[in-house]
Amino acid sequence: MIKTQIQIPDDLYRRVKRLAESQEWSLAETLRRAAELLLAVRSAGANADRATWRLDPPANTQLRADPFADPDWRLHANLGSGASELLMKSRK
View 1 (tube, one colour):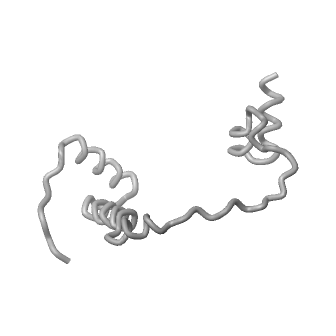
View 2: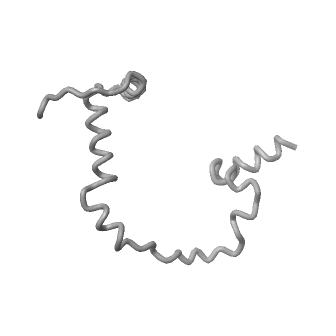
View 3: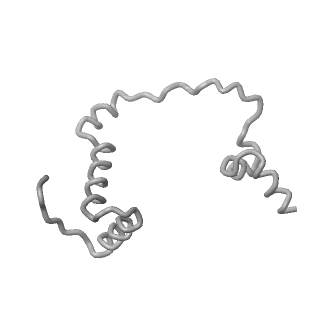
């Protein structure tokens, strides 16, 4: 490994330090993980790949009804089956 020094704004340092502590990582490990994530997302060949990338066609889910027609669809999706019905009954 190479040892180096970096300069970051105070607020960013405090936020990264808090994240490191909450994950029980060292500051160095947190910054290494951040660098690895950035490289994975923004790899050198990403710009070339972006020009040729195409969205896959939608999957045929064979749904019989629009799941987003219900105004509480987020509630149902986040709570799972059964729980959303109980919550809706408690609201009435």
